[in-house]
Length: 271
Ligand SMILES: [Zn+2]
Ligand SMILES: [Zn+2]
Image (cartoon, rainbow, N blue to C red; front, side):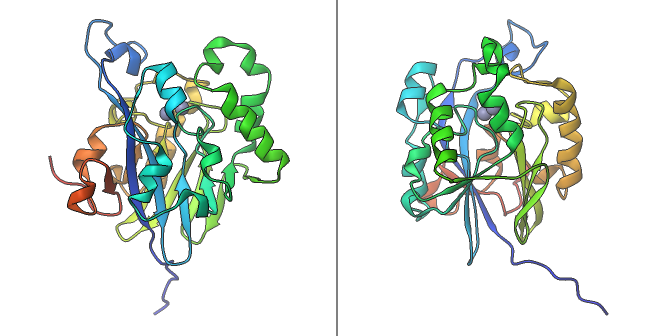
């Protein structure tokens, strides 16, 4: 009988570094009730690692953005990564799901890293769409300038549409929320898990076909929900970008990391 090649599974973690409370339903869903309370947003970076590779997925934001946008910062993402034994100055590879302030800040905390990005996202963040306040609001101009400098320094790796970055780890452009938004499909011991990032902010977005108000193309965003389901082993293998439920559903790797880090390569709890 033929034995199919299976890559070594990656461990997969979510690190919660910030949150935003006091939201209304209308802040999370187009058409949401202006009087109804909305879910908090949690802010995460993710880590996929195994014996041969470590990928950090997104770099989050730092103190300045937290202050300007009224977000509560628990710690800088680089400090959080130390809790997993990862020194940001040693990280070689960072995947940026997109260039919004809460996913692509603190780039200089990763002085050696190569950053994996979709060309559509770079064009979007530096091109004519940024004339419009609505579209540029989720970007921080200083982050975009840093990104451009890194590109001139040869530290951006561009991947168009679907690309395999390692055996068992691929990126896929879904667009929608941002022009070059990419999701990350990771082979784990429980099958393929998809880090959706802002392809779905909350579980409710993709489960009920609801659109988060920060959006570039709603048609692509809604089509992206189908892509998530196609890429993931099951709905339990889709990880939304900002849902507080992720911290309740998945186990912490140790008692001291409770409320800070969860393992996404373990099965979620029944709640
Ligand atoms: Zn975003
Ligand atoms: Zn986001």
